[in-house]
Image 1 (cartoon, rainbow, N blue to C red):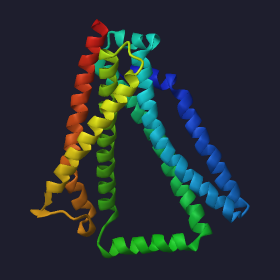
Image 2 (cartoon, rainbow, N blue to C red):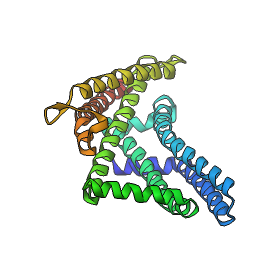
Image 3 (cartoon, one colour):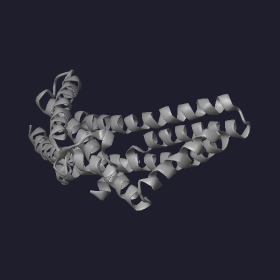
Image 4 (cartoon, rainbow, N blue to C red):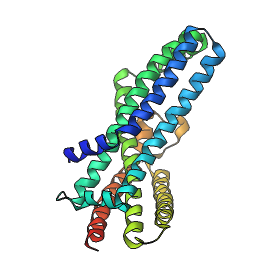
Length: 262
């Protein structure tokens, strides 16, 4: 599976480099504006950086979908699924590739975010005042760095499960469309419609679970709950996402075997 992941990374290195070059270009703009004390240009650079970071998130999602669709629908990509490696491992290698690309971008964005914060805090005293106020609030509530770190890790794990359950659901919908509508020109559109319908059902089921979950035997209200209580509150919906991810991977693998046998 790791060999397949390396192959996927080498094959899709160009989009990753393109996104990294975009981050570098905006960072150079921000650094130049700060060096020249051009406040308006610095504000614009920070806004563009925020928008670009959000765009990177959607770019990773689009990359995962387009890469899978191209392989399952093209003749050259079709050969990948005819290798002696099991279809489950092929799917997992693609998801691992998406994770690696997303992790690289997330690490770069996080490092640049901390560095840019020092620039903004030095330029605007209000930002530093707000940071000091937040630190004082956390200290008054007795929230230590260890608790914050644990909550960040748990939140990141919850996000990853939710993200990859969405990816696996999309894989399943695309595989369904390409298997049973292989000669149709609108198979991608059908796959997207199936995905939208499945995603809405999944989110409604999770919302239903969240509305009925309790913390310490009482209903949870976001406005008066702690971070820990909020994470406990969303735990049932996270389990649903994990179950959906496993089920979609299994069904996609079975459908791929069916498609290869046709």
